Length: 167
Image 1: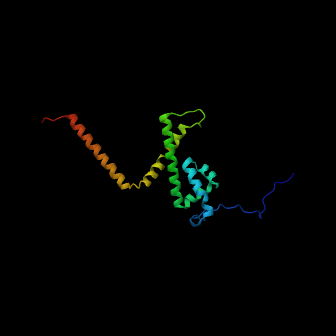
Image 2: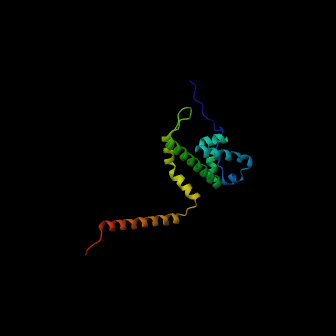
Image 3: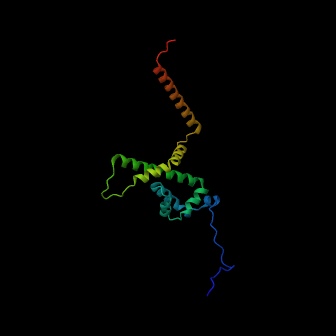
């Protein structure tokens, strides 16, 4: 009976995964940057990273590596996703308001669209706040002012309900 073969000590070592460091990300020449535009355009259109990578002709890991190491690309990525989710919201709103025709058109999954929007609500809100350049102090001050206004309304309503007090 033959014994199973064992790997020899001279066998080639496993190939290590390469990291795209920040210097490489910054120095990536124009020949290697062509995929970014296509990737971001499809990401904005579909909100799907896999589809965007496929359309750009790059391996799925490449955009993720670049996003980790290149703040400008990460910002553009978030912007593309924000645009995609805004488009999805508008499509969903249109279908909910006006209904959807099913003859000859692609079926739209409203339940999954709502689920997807819910999952990414916080991310989209954070990105919108960053784009609108809202300062956290200004947001807190606005909330405090609104709470004070509501408090005054409650006090005024209670006073009106109790009527004049005779002492």
